[in-house]
Image (cartoon, rainbow, N blue to C red; front, top):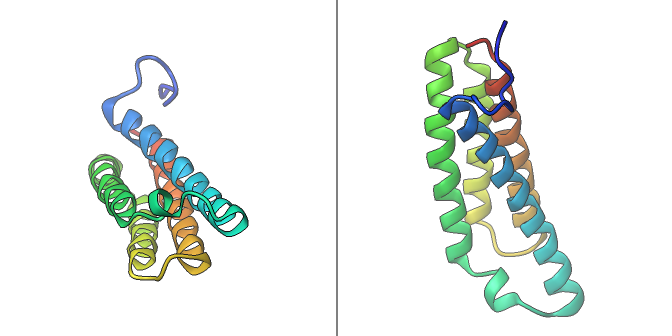
Length: 127
């Protein structure tokens, strides 16, 4: 019987996958909140739209996904989590090349959703 990825004895890879999912959720919230706050209220643009936040987020997502999903792919020999997550990271990279606004937010949200699916598939793969 396999151990639940949410148990206290979860492996480091499982914890990285969980962290990656949490980061993706925070990223999606940041994107939606930025569009709403900056568009609707005209506040926080200097901080919420700072390119450094997006670059750091993508770098962190790349590292976590590379380690967790790459490690998982080596263990369970399934390509789907890796391919889906890398597709998501590609969308996120495309968002960095887009001007701030709706297009960037849509690309990022698609990307983080795909990366999350990759992490979920990685968590559910047999060890």
